[in-house]
Length: 387
Image (cartoon, rainbow, N blue to C red; front, side):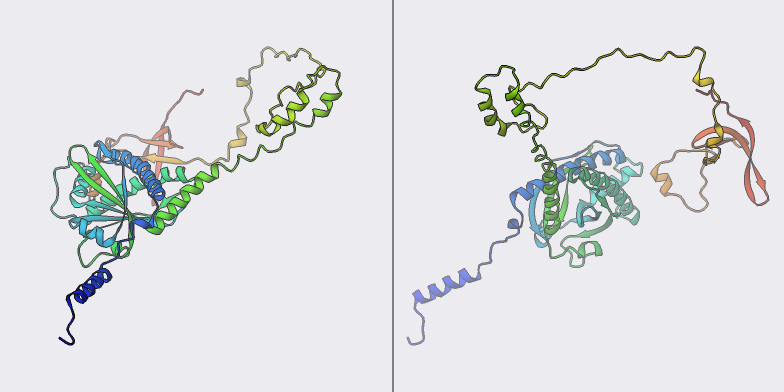
């Protein structure tokens, strides 16, 4: 039996191997404190509430976004949870704070939103997302996150600005990722999950991904903005009120004997600036009071009829605009523009065109050609009532 291991030795070796080979617990959740997670959830809640109002104006449907859920995750965990085709939208913050925010939307949700933006009813969906649909969702996210940046500016007391969003359609579990998503591979994120409802058409989840460093920067900016409001409190420390105390002792006015002893005890409590100590009466001063006399107005003087010096404003430049006509079109019709497209205006052929000065119509006229340039011949002056 030389060279053979006993059962006890085999069990000891297997037990040591099991302990050594057990993977360490993931420390992703420990990278942010509960306070930091709460702050990020509150920021996302306020920003996405504003963004939902903006999305409502774009799709003309009721938009509801629920309270966010904040958690930390790695890219591998995210890829295992979401394997369906998704649309990734990268928003870069370029002023006020520096960092990236990655939005993840389901492909079907993007199809419905873009169809609503183009004048559809949300049911006429395409099979494959085109560059036109990606451009439309980028414009929607640009307006949504722009309004969210405005809300963030009021929270952080600084100007926040974003760059135009970038969008890609990818699968999280795919081996090859696009340029937008490739820069985030291998990082740890703060995942903010929100439930989004758009009328009766969309009932899904959207996600916001913040890199850990950017999430900590947001928390620090939020904490500093709160700390900045409490700095002016020590300002009322100077107190000029104890100065009149010797005069109060020398005046013949009767004072209680305990009053001088109470004043030093109450001095530490008299923090508000300009407030007199208890029991102190300011000395009376003689004031000369006289009735006010107003100058009478000369009869017959009317400032409106006086001569105005209009020469003072003769050199002020004004913007003159000649308007041929107007029309209203939907986004779908505008996106179908091509060379040769004819846009019908609300003016009839031969009808006088409007001449506007600083946006106010002052005359009507007709188009003429002067050598190689267009001109306008005034045919009628619009008379307005002067106030």
